Image 1: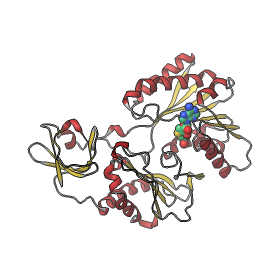
Image 2: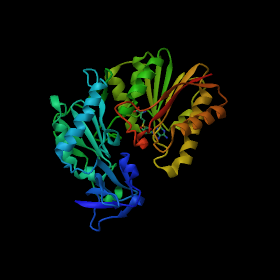
Image 3: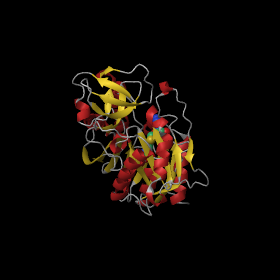
Image 4: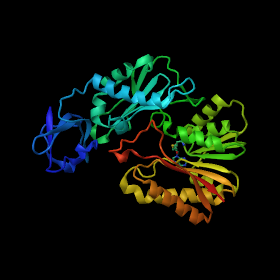
Length: 395
Ligand code: SAH
């Protein structure tokens, strides 16, 4: 196995279990090293600090194991890590007759950097975010199949958009295991959703909003709800169950709007309270009547995919929130989110503060929201925190 030697004194973060080695910390890189290689990482005095996958770029190694004792990174290794992740999900009460959608593996948060696995019924949808995980995909699929109680029957690999483009791996989205007669309906808190892992965004569904959707349900009774950036209509379906008098869902993608309509039909067939619109959010807010909705959800895509986009992202959050706040009646509630990892909790809150000031509204924070427990944050890897939200009372 090839060994990467760190610069003097640069081992500290690994001794603290931070799972990444940045390229600037490296003193010597083996000449024949290739994207995705499993490597040993050692300090300048030759002490082995652990094993990880090498990749070209500023994050040069993603660590899989810490310590000097040798460990095989094989199917059994992945099976141990994934089984441990499953224990946590069971403890969280996420495997129930009325709940079959949850995140089983959340990358660094489950000690398998760059691997995401979402469960939808008996189908595991797997995403690789590094070449190393891509090369190990069959071992990981086999490890998923070894979970108890026949939990996994199909493994769908969906990494066409998640792997570094420069690595030129040309991954193909397809079933690694199973794939015949697959049921595409998953259940979340008793509500049913068609999950389009073949063509949908991410793994087909945003499991990370599950708890926030539950909270939204509890605010919905008697309210007129606007679900902006609805995608599969998750918030809309919960609002319907919560007793909203009217639910409107908006997304610029016609595909998303048809997914929302299908999910409403699956749970509330022939219910006249829901209507969806394929339209740009800013345009919709611009021509929307003042006072039309008293519960509004703003869950836009990540405005800042990287740090360099931060300034424009904050302006984007301010504008969209100001546009909504300006037209909300007194006594209304706004659920507003940012899923940009590059935007901190404080920066997001400041953007919403500026929006409230710009709209000249009195606003109070009722809840400060985050990602759910099946998206755990490794305490040594604060970068794993990405979802933040505020529930605001608007006067
Ligand atoms: N709230 C959703 C997830 C939102 S993902 C859920 O709980 O599942 C973000 C969505 O915003 C995508 O579906 C995307 O199509 C949509 N979108 C992106 N830009 C938009 C715009 N300018 N106007 C309206 N929708 C937009």
